Image (tube, rainbow, N blue to C red):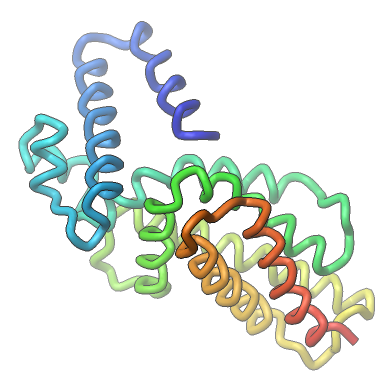
Length: 221
């Protein structure tokens, strides 16, 4: 779902809500738009929650009702769409049943979405390297990202195990280690792609395929 589609969906709910709920929805909508604008204009590091709150015309305390901190706010902007996008991929079998095809089926589906807002997703991906483990201090949106990350790792482990069972992957390969390596390479390559001048989905997927093919060749018999 694109950002514009998400906005249209939220707007369509207005007429069915009471005055108080419409007020909450309007604040949420202003926060999301303000956060997107400030992150794009200033970059994640330079952006402040104070400026975002001012841009959204709300008190800073109100902003923290929706997100615990700046990082949590960043992931608030993308979690819903990524949850929906990845769940669709988990529920659908790839047309290419090879190991490479199965891996790309999961990873490449995100590239059109990432390319739609490269600045925002470059920041999100960069921040994601800092919280693979639960510190107990993260906000709910960061926790949602981590839970989705863990679901993806589990899905990849099952793919590795299935390919081992069919004889396609060397038996000494540890599925959990292989899944971690695949995700690590994906994140590094995706960040590299998003850091380019004009990242397009077609170019990004082509580069990802090249990198993943080298890795898969090392896993397979």
